[in-house]
Length: 323
Length: 203
Image 1 (cartoon, rainbow over the protein chains, first blue to last red):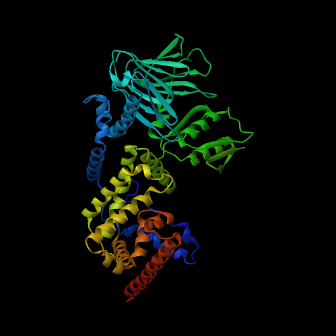
Image 2: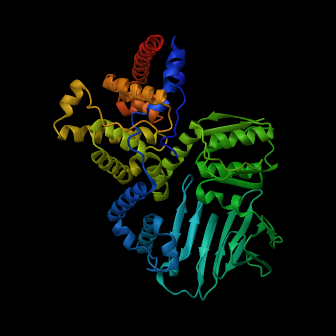
């Protein structure tokens, strides 16, 4: 679709100042039918073949780190994730390296910094995708062996695909505990005004409780619930559209009914940028934004500014939002 | 302000943004983004390499090598730059090296590229349109190399002045001059062609 035969670049603005710009533009548009380079156009099969060859060469380069990945061969999880295997392999290698350095029974930490996203395969085959500005930590057992306890700590946002197992899988956040048997779900734990731990379930069954307190709620696929900041029990599960919640996994961006302050903090993490706010901007007003596909920071800020009657301008290392 | 997903008819602006997003993700070792870039850019790069080498199999190998190097050195790239300019420049250098290795580089630089093989014009054009398309391609072949290269990168590969300048390793102002001269020459050819046709038509 892109870079292909249908691309029709507009007449360059730089040529507009020429005295005969009209003539030049006429020739420019006539050239549509005269692509001098139309001789080679990829068909799907040739492109797939070329990619397979390139992917093979890349994996050949990284076979050493891939070999130490913890995924058990032949598992369903591995089959469905083969395309990203080298990346996971790298993360796993990094995790393994940390483990070797600190030795048991230390904690392994995987961090997706601002502007980054990461995927981790745990020893039991469960997959964790980390959003920007998020940290996953777990005790050595997860890469080591015993499946009796499956427990991770999350600071930030992650999508988890937990493979069924004998033991329950526990995600701890700063204020909540999420327990599952085998399921796919999203956890967003942000300790900031308007934040809390939000859980959205794609499939399977999940139990959410406030940290350290027994009372919880159970929910299944399509439902979401939150433990809000300072709350001692979770809210009632509600049916939720999962598409916006999960759009970060494809580098889209969504914030559903969040305070402006939280949205700006999320944008800072995603785009590794600095967003300043001048006086008179109401940070607690809630709004919803949803970009299913990757969008630029500028276009998101422009939409938010338009919706809220605000303005913004570039400053060193980021933007300032003003009334 | 729920915003629907983008449809497939993107503007050039959002294309550039998407390329930038992929570039950043590749720098962070994201293989899915690398695949997306490869799939989006391979055709254009192979076509460009064919223009220099005159051979499609060599061109395809060059593009493969360019992407391999791009991945191997991903951590060294500045993701705020243009990934298009980076890849086209890599392909250009590899293609010129390949031509040089074939002892043709001197000839190329002194006299111009050998005209690559052309395919038939798109079948959906009228006879007059096909004839004009064919003529335009011939006239493009007759342009000085640098002008044709700048025009191809700008018009058919969608690169900005700055990106073309980075690929050809010249100033953006020079790119502008190449484009203006190329389009003016083509316009003159077009005018003579039209006069010729109308004289024939009248007689």
